[in-house]
Length: 305
Image 1 (spheres, rainbow, N blue to C red):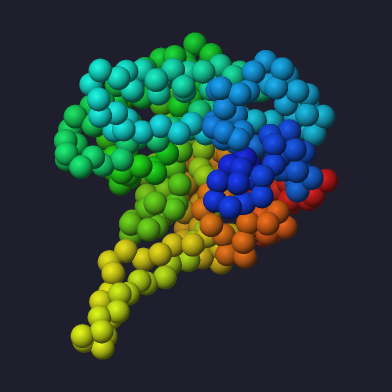
Image 2: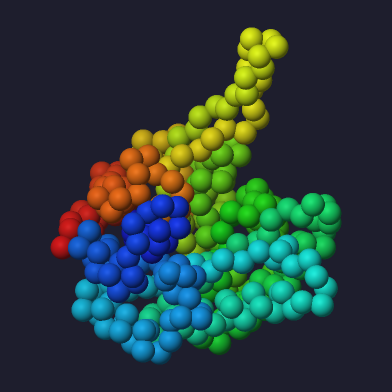
């Protein structure tokens, strides 16, 4: 069995969705049947600039009242982003993740999700790789005394292919460095989902899930009275189980590889049907229902409260 969670970024308004404060999000998640949530480590949610002791205490009270835990915080980093040598960019990111982890301690957070880095125009992949390794190592070392895990998501360009991600994990070489392994990226890039998930599963702390459809793109050429095909399709989020991602194979690979942990649902792009709260709720509840129907969570977990 997997343990479902709901990512607060789904109700943060960043892609035109309805916005809920973190306390209201927790209440809302509980009413839909989620007992666990992932908190977005940025505005308008768990910002290191805005969320102080009083806000954390109030959120903890709401979590206790609703019977909801927050085992994961999502941090937003890019090891390749700094371009000016005199700016301590890497130190800022390490400090940001460390502060999020500290903020999460009284909330019961034991996992901080991070990324690697995007490709740079200068093409210096080896330097970015080494910088990423150093960044992840220090983040792990700062989380370790609090018993917290760093989960590296296969999202950014560097080490996004599964075998490369495992190579990066080996280079980091920290026992509390794990994976936040998702189906979205390998599915878009054409990896076999069962094989990739089974390979990543022994190293995986969480998985974050959403489903999508793809649309081919074309540009009209009037002189030819015809179209040029664009290489990269447009991708759009749809209700879980109705897109092109083979989640049955993905979850089977995770399970056969030994992972049965937290499976978080997110709405982190424009949605078919719009961003009104009724549509967000429909997507969040469809995920629970699909997971229940496929025997991946217990039936009690999908009941609204």
